[in-house]
Length: 380
Image (cartoon, rainbow, N blue to C red; front, side, top):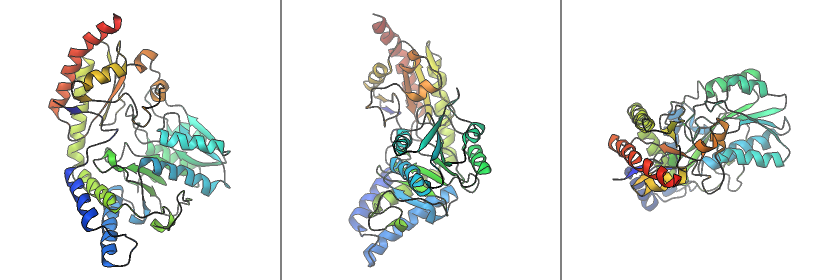
């Protein structure tokens, strides 16, 4: 049996999405900037996908800019804001557990003379609206806070944070990295008035290499890619028509199945947590997102458990897939106060709507069988 529990790293593309993309690349292959019929067909595909995505967020179609994925969207939001607003101030607020696609652009901006305040999260893995409000200065231009943490599933109170930020200074931009939150949580941008919001397609059964940045109408942003002036000059380069259409299809299905899928995710999450923590020395560090389970298996290093599960056809993660090539401890697990032993033995099980109860039970049974043996070898 195979059980894929690494969906926060990437999801399997829906077969109908892959099929439609292949059809577009062969039949509707025109450049959407071309004025002839083949180009117009490509342009219409982009417009349809844009309308679908904008509708899912209660946003306007013109507020959606397509990118190569979450990393580019976050870079565009952060660096683009800094370039546009540096005369108004050079102070940015974020947290100490952001994804590398946020923390690294911030580190780059620090080298360019900007000041970054990284707020510490509490034991629940979040910062509060009060913390953010207290950190705001006269020269603050941007607050960037993730929606859902990719390692432990902590759900940030982005609505309260947004209101605190704009209540204190409406000129400050509020950005949220929603890569792990989009289509896992309901997002209504008429209620949460974020100025910028980042999404990646391959986290919701769309293709890799596509994402978007929501930019609220009236938000000043400097492009970070220049060229032919596509997407109103905000992101030059010929649009990836097939992937944009594929993302639109994935969003459509996600919207249609939202309630049923979310209930299924919560059920599987809770089943995994109950089954795993019934075993001795297994501790749950999950913080509320419907699709992320974080567990430490005391006495067995995470890499050992990961590869032992892999040999049984169970695929999990030892942290963020975007930083697993770096030999360093998780800053997220450190930030929430885990001991070194807990940090070194933590795995992430991340779910999707296609995971089954049988797969969850198989994982529990396999861990129950492997854990005593691995602990015995470790002690030996």
